[in-house]
Length: 417
Ligand SMILES: [Zn+2]
Image (cartoon, rainbow, N blue to C red; front, side):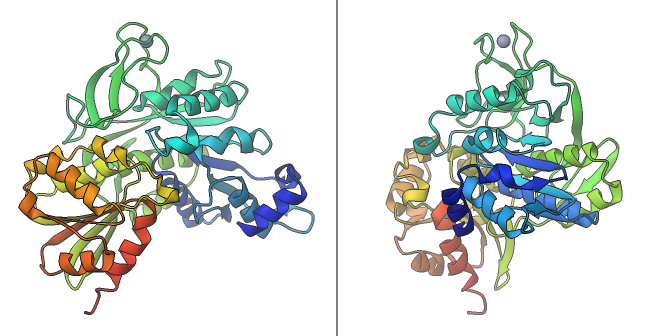
């Protein structure tokens, strides 16, 4: 980051000075940027390519410039087979109006960090404006109406690729979670859904103007969360997670690999060996107690995690850690958009809450109808983790942005105790 800050200070247009002779692939979204970009990088590397990437998740201008500075020659030449970048949604127009871009992948748009980005709609319109003159590959989640609409930004661009997933076992005909994108962006009619996979992601159509009809480039079928597998173009992919949410991200990866004709065996192998670690659907054992840790910085992220609890038939306990530090946003009202009803019908035997807003979280969960005698708030994360591991029941852990790493550390410290 420091490199980038200094470089930008000396020359605000420094990004135009790097010389690049390889494809540049960028991923943007509200949720899933880091995992998807890292999986693209991992897959290209598995196929034997040299890749320069901002794998650490520094996804704004200074972070990206830092990566370039570290990987360029004295003349500013970046020698690589591919450059893969995770880019913050609000920085896409800023960076790529000045830097080469061959493939842009857009996964989803949800409400997130409103303070910094403004309303989601404003953000989408800014990216739409940028895309009006963009003619490169555009890989879009065709099941997110907030994303698919961007395929119409430039009618002259013939390189639009939509991905779609067939209805999975737990898809619903009613929307179970708060989400955006309920109305057609073109004619404002209420969208009709054949099914919702999660939040507003699903098979939709505008009954008035037909928005939602498009040619599918890659489609996931036979989604089997129990066996952790799905199929695309007759090829079976085995994955390490049992979440519909990650299957969408893998679909984006498969689209990109297909566009660059990456050898099929490498793609299958890379996807089956890819691990979302560092607290993103991380699956670990603490003294033989299965523990699943996941980041959730907005209602959709939290709902995706709660869905995993719902879909898992085993008895379990939940730890939810909520901080309200600068990077999280001081406003934690988004927790009221989390669908805790997902827990009611389920065998969650205890919920521990922690973080600076442990009590807000406890009240929120109690309001959803969950038995208050089974809710335990602790401000101190170490104490919360100690209490959590007093039983040997399977654990699910959800933590927001600044809470994630301290929570993860406290949990890993329990090892061997
Ligand atoms: Zn419409």
